[in-house]
Image 1 (cartoon, rainbow, N blue to C red):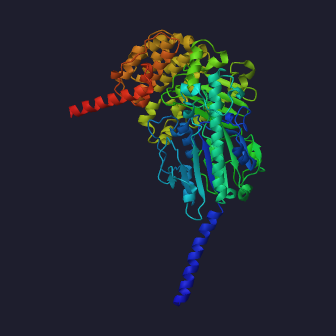
Image 2: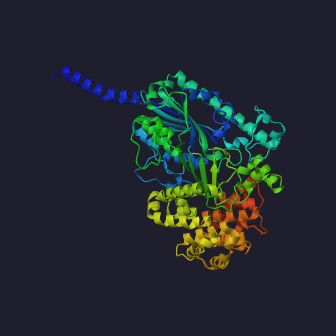
Image 3: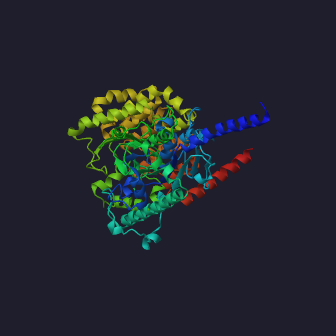
Length: 640
């Protein structure tokens, strides 16, 4: 072949190699996620009559889809965002605790979902919050930083961009009394509709009004971002997805597995070029349920990328997904575990109009101290009004022990204030929902039935494998915990057997069951005293002391002090100090003070607890942490 023909053939082959690549990219839609922090659907008028006007978000809905039943699986940032990015339920992966003590490691062949888009040629960017509780590999983002933007993509590339706006974050409500005395809010507090569980005070109305202003600011930023997309000629090639990253942020929102903590706004603007990938007419809405584990698989489906089998979610848009498929979806799972220094273990199942809540550590009130929450003046006022006896029963429930299980009809009780669990006419529905939740937790399996300290030490390097290896044990622990749901006399033999079990975690849960039963479980006090004195496991001793303290059979504080002094784990200490705070805040007469110098292992969360017990401010807590750390550092150097 002569040089001229060879050159022509070479050029032709190069063009053939390049053209398919760019044509494939052009045939893929872009994705723009717009997340506003800490706001449930209750604060947007387009979802709730009590919300603020959001005209720019409404414009997205007018040219797309409104999902009226969209749910975060968790009511707090790190857990919700990790669920989003992994498409895996957090209690299965070990990512359910906020703030993480240890990052959970995903199996080597698992990726966060943007990595699959990136491998398919997408330019993936994040501006800028991540807050993941799982290990992030280098292949997830092309850029995740304050400078990340889809505009920086290579020519011809489709993009996936995440934009987070923090204007609605709970810190926006951490104003001081000086602002209360001279507020600059735009929303008129007199127009506010309060949730029935909140006291109607000027401060609460002012706090709501300020939050409505924050939502309006978010809406303005959404409008400006859409203007950028329009100016670049990319609007009609881009799915724009707006949603809240979980609920909040007024008291009993963020951090709580109620609708106010989990039910988020979701609007998807559908581009003209790609409207064939949705079965609905533009401007439609659906009551079909979607949850955060579904978001990643949906983006992959829309992009024509195979959804990995390890993901828990199911696509709700894309080729082959029908309107009937979406409308028929009617179930979502929720979970709330440790939030900062405050432990809880709550699982929820919503199916249609019914909401079932299982409070596995029901002795702890929702209003249990959490330092960051109580910076909010409305939170503090709410608690003071409770102490003063100035709240009605609905408003005061937040500061009382929770029922072990709750059942709500959301269609007539959207704020979850009327628990139907004990009503005979709803017994069949209660048992149906209970059974469904238990089956889901066992199938998962849910790692939270081991204390976090055990997961940190034994599980989080290989959480999926650990869960499968201990699946049968987790099922037994769930059954032990559920002994709290039956009358003591009908399960006394099973409780006794669990208290005597060789499995320390069965003993642990049997004692929590006793605490939930309270006085009705007094027959187990003698056994609990033996466990306090002799059990080899510090947390079993803790739960035994907690039960005895709960029924006022024994002062639990000396045991708790001893546990903290002997523990080699800051996580064990954090769990123990939760119990001490419970006795400080509850209707008990124990001296809950603690000598800081006896605490050998601590982190910031532990010191938040100690600071609260000692009556310190957050700045004083941090100062004391630095002082102790410096002293210990000097001591180590002197020994060397």
